[in-house]
Length: 150
Image 1 (cartoon, rainbow, N blue to C red):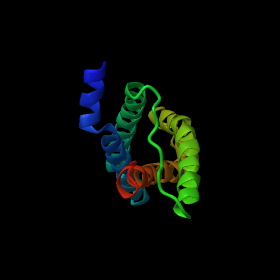
Image 2: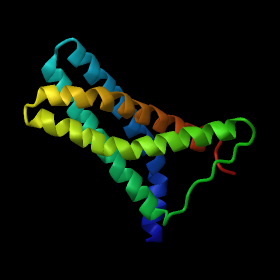
Image 3: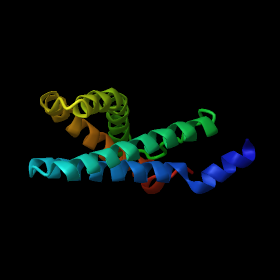
């Protein structure tokens, strides 16, 4: 397990996860732009890709935590940035958990051709999904790049 753990760390799962989060956000936003201009096919393709990207993120996130045996990376910065980071992290984490069932509840009616229901739910899902995607990248940058652990 130690060899695999080192290989995965070398691959840098947190960077991969942040990239997938960012890609998801871009795809969701582009999908929203497409449906706003009544371009249904591109909307479906982009949102399907966003769903795949988010699913790959979730697999990578869980894999990273399994391989680390629950070891968490500590946020080392001090001063006013510290409470900001934790408020951002808490909101991101809470909404990330909420996003999964929201996305499922948004996709199912679309697959069933219930576009009226899909639209009603998507109005709530879209901003939450975008927030989680963007804040996921910010959390990564703050934790690993801007204020890396000692």
